[in-house]
Length: 250
Length: 372
Image (cartoon, rainbow over all chains, first blue to last red; front, top):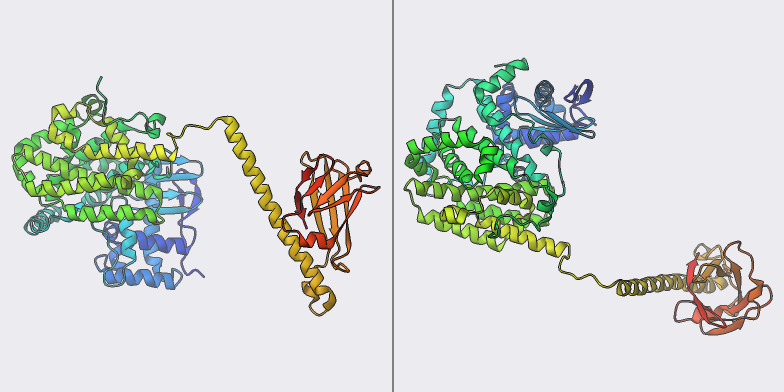
């Protein structure tokens, strides 16, 4: 029983073909949970689609957790709003990918990325879409084993900060960041906080493509290796030009 | 020419050309370029700038030029020359080696979990990058005059753990091979501190070689063909014997059940076999076979069970077998006119070993090849 109305979009590698955004409500809700309802990726989605905050507060871990649980128990019906903005972002980025040729196919598989940084994996339907560079999948899985109260978050590792020496510096960082970002437009936030980390992450995807003997174990995302321009041609001002070419908001 | 510690041509991915060092260098250059596109104010940015610049110092100069990194490196050097000590002071607050150790232990434990191999490979690569960044930042900070013995010791502990658990990072072996191919082979003569940051890669390359040797049994000397053939023959015989035993046990159970149920008749007739038991023995060369048909409900254990001998090509009865002796379950009989011999059911039921026919005069053995 599905209460979720699934959307259609043009195929990024063949614009005349229409594809569905996820196979069924379960896949759609799983991706909402993994990406739009998990910190820090949820914060990036709120930049990509500002109407996100009209649906729920991405900073409220409990609200995200409850939204996810409710979606699962209603066959996706209660997640229509979030799914629609997700689908809209995927479709727009798919069109960018077609125009900028940021799309690669192998067999029936297509990988594409747009100027918001939304990366999508397409076969006969959209199979996955997310913002790379917003936390690692292992931490996501662990965070989802938590319950209400901890929310869905994924922060850890070497860069957690040095115990006993981080406090004052963290405060300095926060003030510097706030001061800098206070003058940013939404589009600048979109570039620096979302698109650029996505592009950097995509450049590293090939590192998961091989097993230890050099056999390809997962070549899908690695297909985009070399598809994006070098960073020296992908600074903010270059990106703005590309956005204009795609008819996107700048 | 001295051996290059960082390149192991025996590794499969290296041999197969699956390793792309140039691409890794372009990724590192792009990462540094992205950092330079900001004003480098926060600790993380300072940390990135110092580590990313230092990483490119290890790269073979021709590769750096080929990947278009010279201008980016020049800009980074200029920024560090202007603000090096300030950046180093800020960067020092970022690394948390204890948290790295905890995450590395999780990676090692993840080999018992169902994680997509690609995901594990990326995780292992990122953990290596994380440790590498911290070490590279420490070296860069040292160049700016900022030493930090405490952090150095903590990172040593991470490296010791890694050396003892290098297998945990084999998922990122191809990435490590690419890093190795990007490194200047003369690094230890050029800059000892920088060369020390590469020891973890050498550890992983060694572990990869050892793992490949074990997986592909590269140290095992192949056995001579005649030994392999002999072993294979013995294996096949053992396999056949096991199969015969299985058929024998099934047949015996069916026969016993038939006899046990017979006097009870209909009461629990559902358990009584409804069709006769057919046993087939095949000549080793496949040209002939023998077939016995045991009735579903034999009159008694004394009932004589006929065994017919047939040509495999057309199922014709082998009349020419008449007069030859046949042995089954320790009992010998003479094949009669029409290629038929009779064995009492009791003999079959009291057999201790799978029924195997032996045909005189050579006493060639025919295994039981089917019961149904």
